[in-house]
Length: 298
Image (cartoon, rainbow, N blue to C red; front, top):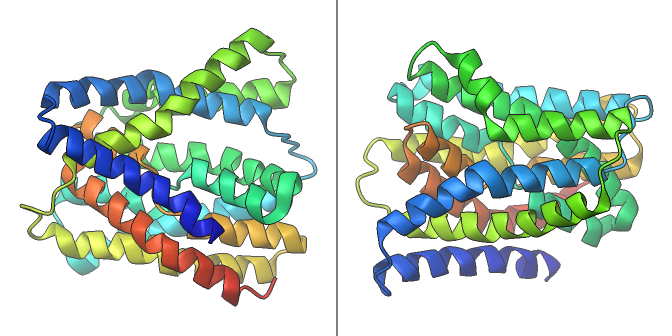
């Protein structure tokens, strides 16, 4: 029941976005402006604030960080395996590939707290802090490569990567952030998920997907089925504590982040397919997360 109550609000916000556009006749320009606000201001504030607050220690968490990096690299590799098998259009694949390895940070931190209290959430924060730069670099690289060769330029200007790097630098370097700044970031970050999901709902459509359906199915299968199997294998091979193994498995089951849609739109990708994939993945995760936690040997 805890999983259902955590997932349901996301779908209510998606439904609200669809209702605002299609039933209440909000202008599409409103959602275009809103997603820019999320991408450039609200979500970076959420990333920076959550990473700064997380109790990170490279020395104590080196094995966990290595496990997270290995899991993330496997997700990226499985996403790109779709190219020789399905032969999708380049931009369609670059947009949807991130749905296989990006994750819903908010859901991960919420579920870890519900399952294992503050200690579980602290472990999840370490996992998230390691994975966010990796998945953002992979996603931006793929999308920028399909546009032109200015990948480095896109990376150094990406607000999500800049926020993550700044948060890690402040956290690991012991740089104090004034309380008033943290309070402001917390208020901005609180808006990010809700507004991002509303924007997803406003663009939600199953029309005109065509050949993207097979690629969407591949990425959802990687995100919700293949990665948990990989996480189980990594957990059995590496000397992690039982709680770390449980949190790594939970992390591997998380659906794609709504920011995947925002990134695809901002970089000229196939935002519609990403929005549908994100929504379907989140819906299916209400079934797959409890399943994997039930099957877990940890």
